[in-house]
Amino acid sequence: MTVRPACTGFLLLLSGALACSGGGTAATTPEPAHGAAPSKVPPVRVERPAAPSFEAAATGNGWVDGTAAAETSTRYFREVSGVRGQPFELSGDARGDEKSKACGTDWRASTARSVVLVTPDAGRGTIGFTLNATATVRRGFWRTKATLSCTTLNYTDAQAATMARGQAWIQLGGGAADPDQLVVETGGATSGEWALSVTDTLGNKFAPTQMGSTLVAALPGAGRYSVAASVTARAATAGGRDSVEQRLRATVRATSLRNAVASAIGRPPLRDLAAPFEVTVPATELADRMQGLLAKYQPCGTRPGCAGKVSDVAVSAVSVAAEGGGVAVTVTLVGQKRPPLPVVLIGEVAVRGDSLRASGLRLAAEQPEVRKKRDLSDAVARVADVASAATVALEARRAPLEAQLRSRYPVRVADLCLEASTAPAKFLGSVPSADGAELQLVFAVATEPLQACGRPR
Image (cartoon, rainbow, N blue to C red; front, top):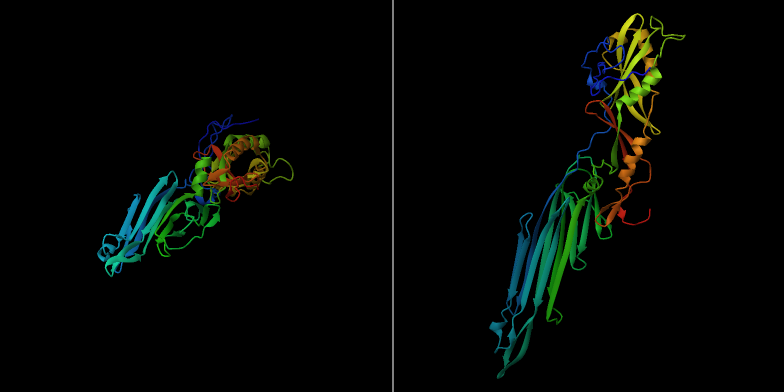
């Protein structure tokens, strides 16, 4: 005999709330009182992670200086900061006073010029900036009078320097203990003075690991972080060079690995960057398996029995609902000399091999009509043991979802790739169900360490 619940979506409370049951006993089966102690509900082992967030803004600053001189030096020095999210430009010029020293018209002023340009660049889930630093100098000369003509040639050198600096402030979402990796892609800056740093608001530094042109910095969790970089160009005419220019350009782009993975696979990654997926099983399926094992089962019908007057007790109906991090199983006990008695068992959701079962089934709290009768408690314990053996095969549900998730790998971030591990998906636990009608199981596919794309494992 198979008895299916006549309704679904009713969340069983721990005090012994009975899910609606069908069959001939539905009209006479009383409903137990609600309001069991929440502390008795199996704990939730997996919480739905909040989608990781990425908020960022970049700004620029820099300084320029230089010297162009005949006998009296002319020097400039300026340092300015820009406005977040706006391009930043700074320039400075110096010119020597060779004209005032010259005899005749054969002269040229020494010059120095420094230019800074920082351009913020915000994309979808990324933040960065482009740094341009240019230093240009030209030496000057003039003639002084010797005897009767302007014959003595004099040279003056010039020098210039400029520093372009960009800074991106990044606010990473998630939890304080959700580790992330900041992937910083750089380009240019093959010459000149170049520096890059990753810090938090307290000034703690996170040393990045170099992987090709990409830097990877491990971060401990959500919070506010800074990615700053600078490039410095210098030019001087010393050594007899008539004019010198150094033009430097560097690009920086930062991405959260958690966000990049979440975007690529369409779901938020877990704390260790494993890729989760959910397998949903209707609670009625597990109830049907239990009903098949418990149909007409008389836990105390054989000797030695359970003592007392429970030898004819049998199970007439079974219903299952998701409850907290586990399941609540309601079995209805009947006997010739007793009215139908709904009894609530609670247990954890377990996956062994590739089968779902309810593990550790035990009597829920606040059921004095059972706890006060030793023989009835023994009967319920035997029912719980049999019900715990019921299984639901998961392969048909799990395999397609896992294959679909694996097809989205490798995930490319900058010029690096994140590969899915070849190890089978691992069962992590369950998440609470909205109405108790479905068991929502969480599995995760592990990932390999971030590496250069195409590198053999």
